[in-house]
Image 1 (cartoon, one colour):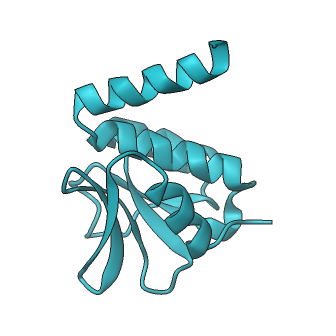
Image 2 (image 1 turned 45 degrees about the vertical axis):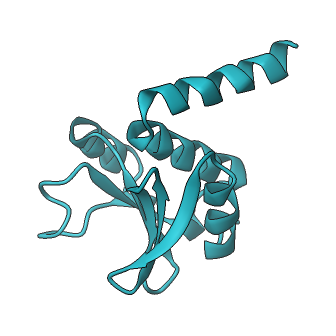
Length: 122
């Protein structure tokens, strides 16, 4: 199964006020200028914003899916995800949405959540 770099690009850019910008030679995805995800240079994994306190549990639960780059991610609220290990696009979308929510300004995130609720209840 798994997902691809093109899936990442399509899903990330569908989130409100998201843009793609190259940094360090890699595509990054930003909301209001702040990075919430980036593709690795081999397109096999992504880095996503993730609370530092959540990383150990995620990696322990699914080490084939989640990992850190030693010496690089140690002190940052960042987690790596192997695209081929994801179950499907829904899982990728949930991961990207979580990272986007952590990065987006509160008002924008709340507006987006409100639109989603209206769509499901309206």
